[in-house]
Length: 242
Length: 247
Image (cartoon, rainbow over all chains, first blue to last red):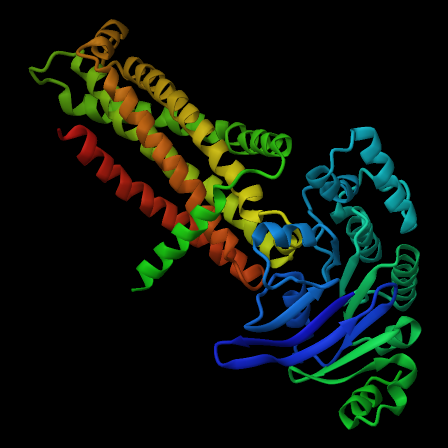
């Protein structure tokens, strides 16, 4: 479980996150939604440690991540997998080496064990016979799947997905959504998805945090979203009707 | 003021590099890969430039000495000293500032804007240490080797052009090469090469690593890397000459 308590982040004098508190549950798909520029990405970057909040606490299963030193943070980070909007695959490495990368850095696996784990992760995301290809040789949907395979290679407890469907066709989007949902349930991962894709939210969302201009406007279960009574959220949903 | 800010950021960046690598095996593999990219990849251009630098310097100095009372072998000695002390280390490193510097900056800049560096950080890897330290180490191993190779090749180029243009005989040229030879000249050239190698790789990596934005900014970082490393090479060329030669 991840808990945010009164997170504040400013860039110069501009307040981007204003006293945000939220809870993200394990084994569930936790969505952060909001318009572009609302602070979703900054919130996610604070949670994974790419940015340091000016105020507030971020608890990973009760451990205050913000208060930890570099080496202590590293131990938490090894339990984090992240799927980036642009996949962020290492383009000088093959698909196999991309997935093997965290295993090579943090485990003492033999090459045979490593290859077995890589193949398991690739099969789990329905990718076969792509081991020796480079990211530039595969499609956008395949890159996302390799990104997921890399993110789950170390059996993470926490999975962050930044706009997992951006730039994908509807069928591939659904495939990626289903995959994230399956993996979340299968491995009981705390999954946090940052998106403004409402279709994705209605297909697989469970817990939802709605951010508006750096403030948390609403938090709750998907079943309650239409009855939230929050005018800004309802307006956001109406604008996203498909 | 801006210079001091930039220098401060560069110093902090360099300090962040020198941490114990996450996995020694991976670090060694990365360093060997970079040695291949920086060293072997620059072999052709360094060969071409060295031969022609030696050849041109022999002709230009030879033309000025012709019909003078200076003995013929002096040409070989001047070519030797000018190439070992200055042309080979400095010109080679200026060319490498362009080739290697832009390569390092654009590679790191692209990794930054495509979030590959963020991916490393999230995994708990010190990205600067993992990506940059092998490049600096590889540069400091291979660039002095390239400079040594350039020194030899420029002297050979000088001999070929001297004989070809009948400015000097091979016997006089060899006599000149051996006349009053100071081993410190080689040490001086290698000290320069080590210093320039560090400057080229670290300055270029610094500019690549702090790229923000997109393709346009990657190009700008690459240009800055080349300009700043070339300026650093020239300044340190003067400083090292002043400190080590003017005693």
